[in-house]
Image (cartoon, rainbow, N blue to C red; front, side, top):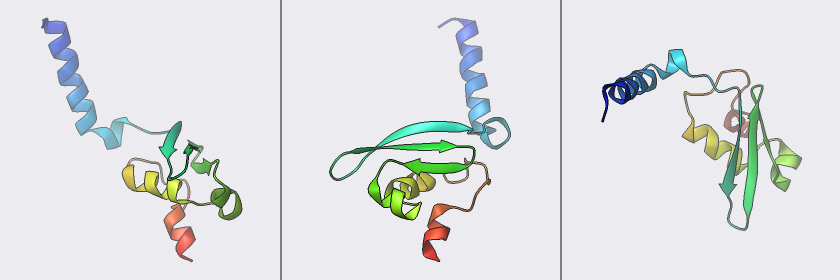
Length: 88
């Protein structure tokens, strides 16, 4: 392995360790495999969306709540977490 690659690996490790200061999710799309079929979940401008019927009716679903758990502490606090909204 050359010295340039070693430097990039070290930088990547540092960026990962400093994730709260260096990494901010703005938008992304994820496929979540449900019990019956895959669902497309998006996060954009601090808001979740899912193509499942439950999300369309309630504005929250198991797919979005699962991703909130997986990404806990990584997303900007632009909206109240869906799990808290659902608990009301």
